[in-house]
Amino acid sequence: MPNPFREAMSGNQAQPSGGRNLAPNLLQYIQGFKGNPIEAVQGKLQSGEWTQEQYSEVRKAAEQIAQRMMRLFR
Image (tube, rainbow, N blue to C red; front, side):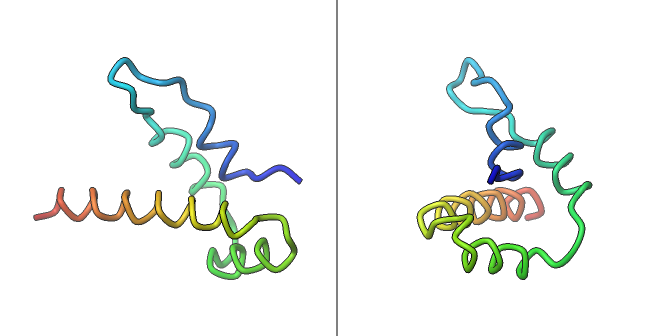
């Protein structure tokens, strides 16, 4: 089954600096999301839709985003 978060994140082309601008696709995904995100992630793990590796990858990316956002507000 397709992973909408992963699809949203992979839709961007690499930038010349080597990074990707994930913000537009991420914002679109967030705006369209309905429900409790914690329950959604737990359901994906329990159903086998996400592997532990995929979960770890998404969690790491989310932590990096949160850290960058915190630096902006200092």
